Length: 165
Image (cartoon, rainbow, N blue to C red; front, side, top):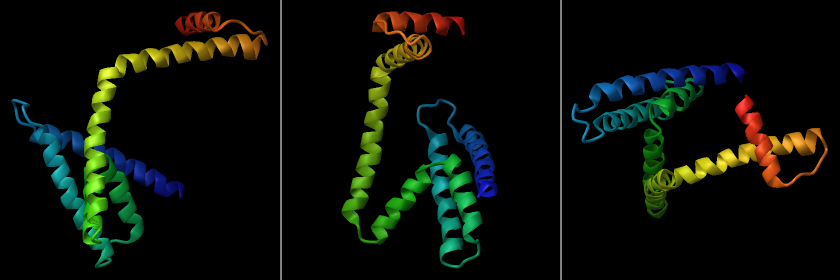
């Protein structure tokens, strides 16, 4: 199992490098359209289909290398290929409603979440920083000194610790 995980990780490294190289190579010079991403995703769908058909129908590739290629390399190269494959499987299984729901949720909600995080990112950042300071202060006062102090004092202590690191 550990060997399999290591091979998936190594294949993932190669997949991410291939994505970086190919998307840079295929990107239009004016960058008005994400052509690099488009090329990577379309090639990823094609390769995913080839590998799957070679393992599922004909048995040319055994299940273990299939996992390494599809999860490791293709997982890092593009997750769109997995999304397209799973949606295609739903359509082949005549699960049209589920396929439409899958597309709607992944595309629309995914874009919405990205925009929400970009819009509210600073608030999330400030909240996370406050949480770290609060945790560090609580660690000192409650856990190490076994003393209860107000939250603001805990946060101030956390800030001092954080700055000292």
